[in-house]
Length: 331
Image (cartoon, rainbow, N blue to C red; front, side, top):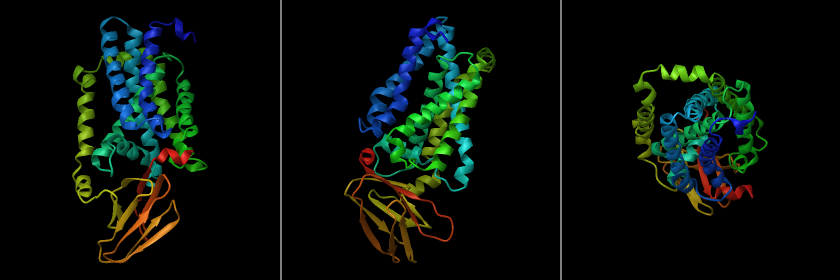
């Protein structure tokens, strides 16, 4: 594979480097180098605009390899991310919180004290930006290579996360079920990406045959989906009752879903219901009984992400306490 002898090697390498800040922003956070928000705003977003500009320039100057790589990488990464998420839905239905990290991304991006529909939308947007940029990185150097090559690429991406503090922060170390689900999801990600890059000419021909409004309408669709998540009425009603530094019992679950504090701060647990409730902190192996109308505080003295829920005989949905700086848990 003589990558450097193919057209526009220098420009493709530059675009490859411009993709790195997307996933790199998360690595900067978990390594304690810089906040996710800062790297995203001041490095990734300018790089994303650069990639859009490069696609526009390449499309109009006859640089077909570069333009094709950016186009196919975008769609391959997008479809791969959808496949990655769909492959994990059965595990979500079985009770696994496989999408929990995405919610954390949104809280970190907003530098928020509590989660909301807005932070959920931000987290999902960041999640898809990672999938798309990883797809572009692959397409830039793997034109017409066999689709199986995408599998080791996808597994490499997950391995980087597993070998980083990400694995400690999100409880992947020794959690073989979670690791198996993560790697399975990345195989699913690789399949559409690898196929589109392998069938390079057919992919470009198929895209060119689509109506212009369909090919260029994806930003509008993306914005509408973002607003749908951010403004979802049941979610915003739930958010309106949430308070920073507090978790409130509501119908056998806690509100908000995510609360973010600093180490040595307290979380106030409130039970406004007319019946007693018991709060379980699974991470600390700790229980807190609350009488009807009672309010109690609990101090968190170590950084990390803590899973808490209301003890019940039926189904319950966990909430999480993010104790900053979470990156110190891995040191």
